[in-house]
Image (tube, rainbow, N blue to C red; front, side, top):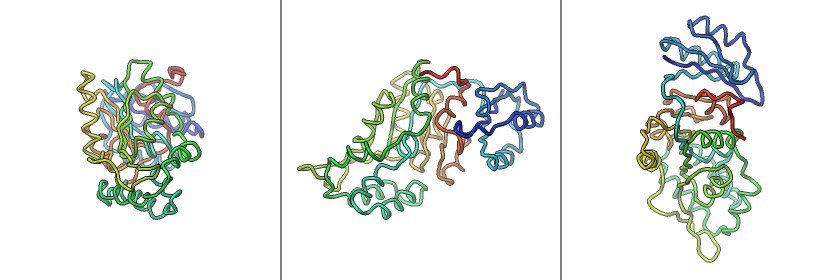
Length: 291
């Protein structure tokens, strides 16, 4: 059996009963279950419809996401998440670069790297090199004044952990930020790259080896093995090309507000919902969310 989930942004609850019932009837699905009125609903289905992606495209116009997944095993025991533009709404290196006066230039490199147009490791070294001489104290100011959490993150972590889940933050960014974000949201561990500093200034170098696409996949495999679970029991979420290996190996790989080239390679695409979409996809209703 399969489960069809329809969802949208909780801030703009545009999912209506007519849309859900029309699709359910067209596909011959089971009774619709509303996980949150106006925001998320699901129904069972015996087979994956041939016109799945055409319907997905049609619903994008309505700002509604459509996901079809196997019903069995959809509630996961582990969350492994990217940080930049996933758990937070910014790219930390772009914010640091803005402080260094090279924001626009670095942001363009970041965009191309996340879209898979540039080698991630080389692009990171180039961008970090442009931060040379920036006071290390700027990191704390950037985190305090510029970084905002993606909506739904705290509910996602609290609910999965309340149901026995484990959460790992694995980023191609920097430990100076992942440590703070992990502590604020409740992650059990975090992995990222290390910015080098000397005499209170950034040196323009980063610790090697760089944590990139392969390291994210390795983290998924290593952590799941340590927990004694199969990677199929993990849900991964990210938005960039360096997340793809992790997304495609996890039992549920969620491309969240992802770059087009990344979303095209993932079956679970959330373009409109926030991080609570990851709970709806597992069958949690709003009343099931932990505080």
